[in-house]
Image (cartoon, rainbow over the protein chains, first blue to last red):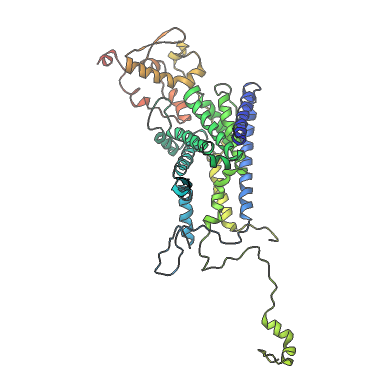
Length: 334
Length: 141
């Protein structure tokens, strides 16, 4: 047992009980269905902007891009234009590939001792694969949920849904993204729990978002495939939220929906203060977004103060007569 | 250290933030804060007369009708069994065209109302409704 993941799991269970009892016993539907989601969105936007502005105000004293290839140099040596970008467009492509394909994670290696003391490095691609699966399936799930927030529902959302559900298994049809999302989340969780080295460096703030998103995925899957809810009633609530005419429909949408909504509210309110801020942070990473033209252009440390200098001209001006008197050579005679 | 804190690459950072906020608040400005009325389904005279449906209450029907239809489809296609005993003890024929759509013949004012509202596109209609009704004849074929 490990206090870090136990504490996170208990926190999520407490949140679950809080909202379930709050809705089912105390009837706080308006509080959990309207007030908290609004509050969460406000916290998210203000927190996100403050965090980004805070990072943008932090000076970068040195150029610290990580280089993964040959820097631009003599004309007959081929430079790695994307992995060691000297131009803005090179940085743009590098950032784009980093954000869309997680290239630096793709290079992830695992170091271990084999046959006693033989050091070996191995290309560890599973984390990259499941991270990619997690992020893209989460994005798909998120975009699919636009059908609850837009009226009329745009064709692209319907198209995405039809692709996601093209297996046409069961009714309501299975959405591939939901299954991949849950599978990837379980991999990311088990990786932290089962591999001793990773367990050692994992904190409660690593487990909590995982448990929370697993909670969101499970409640969503339960509602869609198992316990069933009145979907028109849910849209009445969600569309009411985004059109600023909040209503809480009575009946049909059970406690499980409020658990789902509350977990999402907690996630987005917690977002700006957590590791999840890598969403914004990736754009602000000096190891990725700086050009590597360090030998061509001078990077001035922003916190350099104006150094008071005393040039030789000023020195000679001050001591000219004494220098001439001592027979020292001067550049100007008077 | 820096005397005053300034935002580095101000234009880029501000532009990025404005784009980000624009994207995440998309549902808020897409709907223009208009009032979206929840769908109101119309019952045909025949449905009103019948008073009860295959499932006991409206909420259950709203949430579970698709699973019932899925079960019906499997039972009919795999077992050739078309008898369904409702929770009210009545016997129904398991058939979307002949049972459900017999009373609820107004697809546009009944089925489509909620389906369109919640962006559900069931493929039931690929075969049913516009096609000739199922008969005893093509059941035995």
